[in-house]
Amino acid sequence: MNKPISPFAHGVIDYATSAAVALAPRAMNFPAPARKLCDSLAVSYTGLSAVTDYPLSVKRVAPFKVHGALELAIGAALPAMPFLLGFAQHRAARNFFFGLTALTVGVALLTDWSKRDHPNQ
Image (tube, rainbow, N blue to C red; front, side):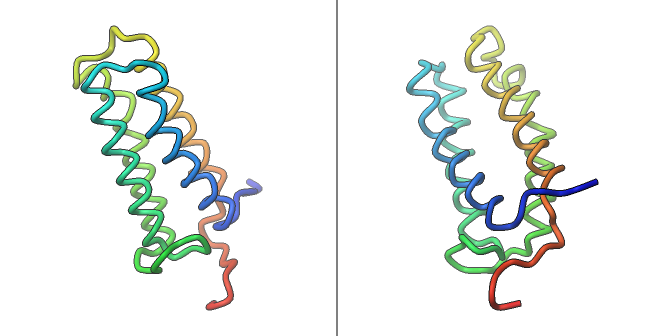
C-alpha cells in the first residue's frame, strides 16, 4: 500500500489537529466533560508532536514509530469516550469524536512510518 503521508506532512496534520481539537469545543458548545477531554487531547497531541523525532518537533526524543503506536492507541479509545464520560447524547460532541477517530486512524494508516525526511538521518 502506498503511504503518501511523510513525517513532515504528518507533523503539519498533528499541529493542525491539535488546534482544531482545542477550538472545536468552544465553537460547538460542547458539554464540560467533552471540553475537558478536548483540552487534554490538544495538550497531549501538541506535547507528543513537540518531542517526536520528525521535522516539526522542538526536541527529537520520541521515535516516530512510537508516536504512531500512541496515536493508534488514542484512536482506539476515542469512540468510547462520549459514552464513558457521559456526553454521548450531545450530537456534535459525540460526532466530533467519531470524526477525530476516523482522522486519527486514517492518518496513521496512510503515514510512511519508516520514511526519514530530515537532515540528521
